[in-house]
Image (cartoon, rainbow, N blue to C red; front, side, top):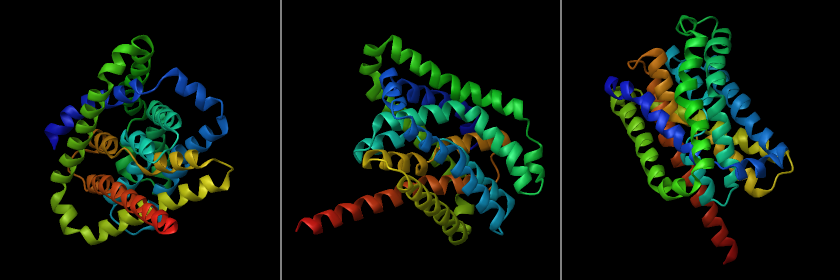
Length: 289
């Protein structure tokens, strides 16, 4: 895992560059025309999700490393796969890519704020958080998340024809990097995942379902169309586990059990979405017959 973590900041740079290259100025114009929807999406991802993670960490009597895992997975932005899933379920793709890009760009502030300012207060001054340096972490995230996203947007704006030609292949490349990081975490944490599967599995399942239920409830409180509802739910639910693993590895090292939480969430989020998607398709067929 240490070898993967040595190269993971560069891998994350390329993944975030791809996020930026998937965004156009047209996307931003479309999204900002319905600013309320954008704010609801940002509220869900930047405020509500970290609050859920912190609440789980405070309430549940588990080891500190698992509390750390829950906080990490809920304070990172959505995964690059969320844009593809949004397209598959006929969501608002412009909103999806805009939310992914904006939350990724802001992560150099939001992640350190949660880990260094909020988490120690919530967990009664846990020393593992107090050892972190806000400025150092912010600058690190600025260079591996924010700058590549902005650079990708500039590249797409200046060289749109070139980007259209390579985007399909670059998306596959980004997805492979994402999968490699997740599987590396699975491999390094295999003994913990197998040994404590029942307790950690139930914990992560409860966390994932809570995120899904809360985001579903949130979008139904507002007068949003179905495409925007689907998009915000997916963007809130599909978390960037690869970023959680990388940020955690840089900040806390590669030997802690928190990686098990991120690796399990990465798998479960897609299983849960697939279950709901298949169930929805089945009910639609039954209603037609």
